[in-house]
Amino acid sequence: MTNKNDYIDRRILKSKKALKDAIISLMQQKDFKEVTISDIVRLADLNRGTFYKHYQYKEDLLDDIIDEVITDLIASYREPYQNIATFDVSKLSSNAIKIFEHVHKYAEFYKLIVNSNVLTSFQHKICIVIKDLVMQDVTGKLTNPNINKELIASYHSYAIFGMMIELIHSGFKYSSSYMAEQLLAIIHSHNN
Image (cartoon, rainbow, N blue to C red; front, side, top):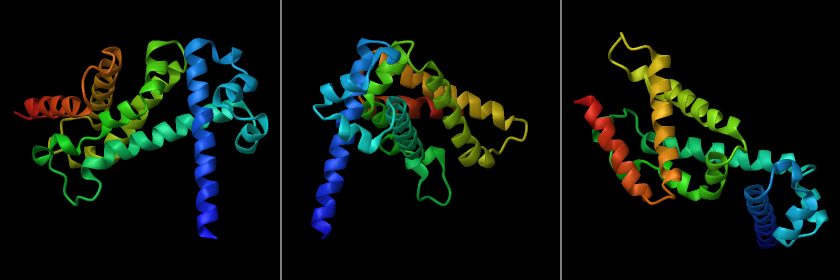
């Protein structure tokens, strides 16, 4: 019974991935308003019934992509200190920084939102998510009481997002590990 469920789950995942890839590809070619469900299923090589098994509207499909990207962004950001009781930035290695791997993983989506006027509000949402993560996970460990926690969280979120944008605008000419090394070097230069 488990094998049949695994097969069905893989089939669902494969169908959803095809639909997600199709809509992103179509949005790179034309405005979201012009994209039809017929366009999506044709490019995904699926039928309309498969689309409607998973989504009611194309907006639901786009929301699913955004939720997936945000969930992975949060996990990637938290990776360096996920199972550590006391997080010490000075002991952080570039191998632990996963946020740029996240950007590479969702490269087509990020290219779409950064290089076009599609989903411009999503860029702001990314900064808000990172700022919230810094507020929740990092600012409580500040030793200088003169530093405003919201301002330092904004500083960090926009700095990281700026590096993400630079990676995208460069056409992904830098590897995730290089970007992580650079971020770590920048962090260490500020701590000296």
